[in-house]
Length: 252
Image (cartoon, rainbow, N blue to C red):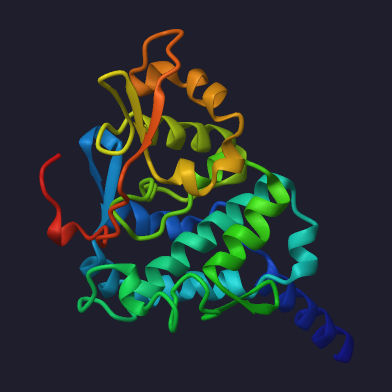
C-alpha cells in the first residue's frame, strides 16, 4: 500500500511539473482576444474580453510559475526562449488587467516608483522577478537573438505587435522571422521616405543588438521599402506608449 501511494505521489508531482510546450492555453486566449490590424502587421488586445477570461489567464500563469529552474535547464534553447517570450507577454497582460479599465498607458504604474518593467510582481523559475528580468536579465543576455524585440510586447501601440498565437519551439524560428517582417513592413513604425530611413526607437534603444545596423537594414531593404544599394540617414520615430487596447482602436 505504501509503495502504491509513493508511486501515485511521484506520478502526480511529475504531471504537475510537466509544462505543455504547445502553450495551448495561452494560444486559446490570444486567438480569442488579439485583434489584428493592417493586414496582420499590427494588433491590439481586447482587454475587456481578456478580463472576462482572467481565471484562464491566471491558470496559465500558474502553470508557468510552477516550472523549476532545474526543469527549465533541461529544455532545448528553442523551448526556453518560447517559454520566456510567452511568459513576458502573458505577465504584461496580467499587469495591465490589475488596473483595467482605468489605464491609458503601461507607464500609468509609474516610471520610478511602481515601474511596471522593474516591479518584481511574479515568480518564475523559483524566484521573484520582473519583465526586465525576463527580457534583459535572460533573453537578451543568454540567447543573443535580436528578433526577440519583435516578439515581446510591452502593451503599447509603438511596440511590435502581440502575436495572435503562442510561441512554440518547433516553429520558433519561423514565428520570429514573420514577426520581424510584420513589424518592418508596418509603415506607421518603419518606413523609407524622402531619402531617409525612419525607424522605430527600438533600433536606437537597443542599438547594440542590431549591429552593424546599416547591414541589418540592407538585409531587410525590400520589407522596409528601401531601394537596393541605398544607405539612407537613420531617423528614429517617436514611440507611442498609449495602451494597445482594441476599445480605442482606429482604422489603419
